[in-house]
Each structure stands twice: as C-alpha cells, then as structure tokens.
Image (cartoon, rainbow, N blue to C red; front, side, top):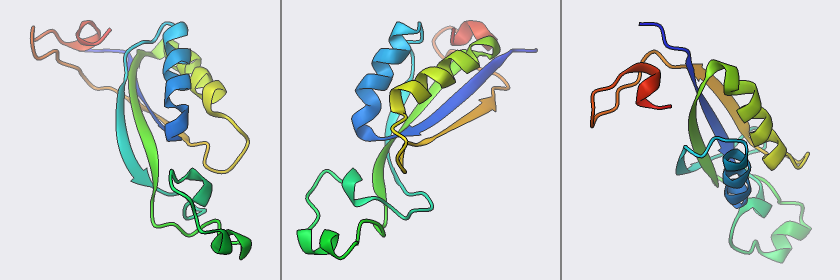
Length: 127
C-alpha cells in the first residue's frame, strides 16, 4: 500500500505553543500531538528559557548557558506530502525569533497508519 504522508516533528519553545497551534489551525491543520520534553542544543541550554529566575550574580558573570536540560515542546503533525511545505513554513513563521533556541523541524516518511477504533489504514486513518 502506497500512502503519501509525512510526519513533521517540531521542537519549539514552550511559550510559542499557543501561537503555533493558532497559526496551524488558521492554515487548516488543527490536528497535532504536543508533548512536554527536556533537551538542549549545542549551546547547552539557555537560562532565559527557564520559567524560574536565574540568580543575578550568575547572569552578571556571563553564565547564561550550561543548563543540563531546558523545557521544550515536541509537536507531531501528520500531513499529506503536498502540505509539508505549508506546515513547515507556518511553524517557522510562528517560532522564528532569530535567536538561539528557536527550535528544530524534522520531516519523516510515514510507512502506514492505522485507526484503532475502525481499523482504517493509510491516509483515511489520519486525514
């Protein structure tokens, strides 16, 4: 069975989830799964991403990185192949601040999908 679906995985800032969800809904893509995750990139964490205050003396010493992990949100969105660019562009527009930590987007092929309730398979199981 050939299905033409892709999974878009986006890792974004927690404070950008609402804006991203609204932008995707407006673009016609209301379905997604959002998961609270912890992680870090090459910068090893950004103190300003934390929801608690960082001690001023640490910030004054230039210690704005080096956190073990920082909170992020992982979004999983399943779309038709022809919708990938529109969804990716929408996510970028909602999240791009031009600062380190804006996130990452991955696009993966979907081999198959099965709706548990009805046993439908392929595109009809998710779209």
